[in-house]
Image: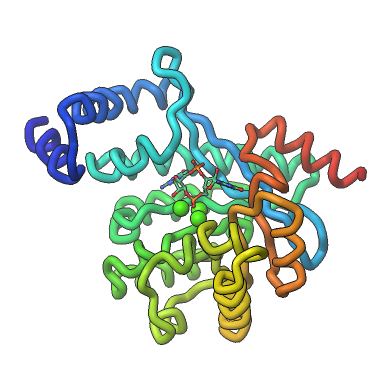
Length: 278
Ligand code: C2E
Ligand code: CA
Ligand code: CA
Ligand code: CA
């Protein structure tokens, strides 16, 4: 308890006492929140620009607390990572995703689904074993799962990342590099990583259609990814002009509020079925 409090405290620069208290109270409630069903998985559609259809989604976790209200993942994922609770939480989310993916497949929707995997989990044998068991027991084809690993996570411990990503690929799961452009991934390292997809970070995408430098950066990233045989996703698309720019630049997939916000399973089904009929 005390060691954990200290670690939560010192990892937050300029932490104040009430921040620390909130963090500890959040983390002590996380197990109960999972049991009570307050941890929910939302899905944000990814639009394929090559076929003009939603072919995949990203799973994004939300915590709906009856007293505190809505808590976003940015507020509790980093805490769960630092306090040793991310493994259990991610497996809980993964179970929810497999359950939902089986359900949408039963309704005839062949959607791939991205799952965010924290850096600390890449080196966890128990996590990777548990993932493998779940995949083996699920009717969901592993090729429709995409593990999203951030560029900075992959650079934390490059050798460990390569080993973990290879294992995921051996399971038949696709691997995506998330938040690309915000880390320090070199070209030679990018070639070494077993990747299927590159997600260009929102900060570069958002102004690409209005800012000349961002436009060059996004276009050259798309070309680079394609030359490495990777699909490119642009995230954070908030308007039609931005979407148009990415389509014209040869980007493969687009994700953002302009296409859809992250939504619960039922709304995702409505969105996908409506779009199909339209
Ligand atoms: P991320 O993986 O980069 O996810 C994209 C974030 O951008 C999501 O925020 C999404 O709601 C938001 N977003 C999508 N489109 C737009 C847009 O057009 N404009 C803007 N301004 N934002 C957009 P969210 O859901 O709050 O998640 C934040 C971060 O929390 C995620 O960033 C990811 O790093 C982490 N996270 C979320 N769910 C999970 C999870 O299940 N496991 C782990 N380990 N991390 C998660
Ligand atoms: Ca992501
Ligand atoms: Ca991202
Ligand atoms: Ca991010």
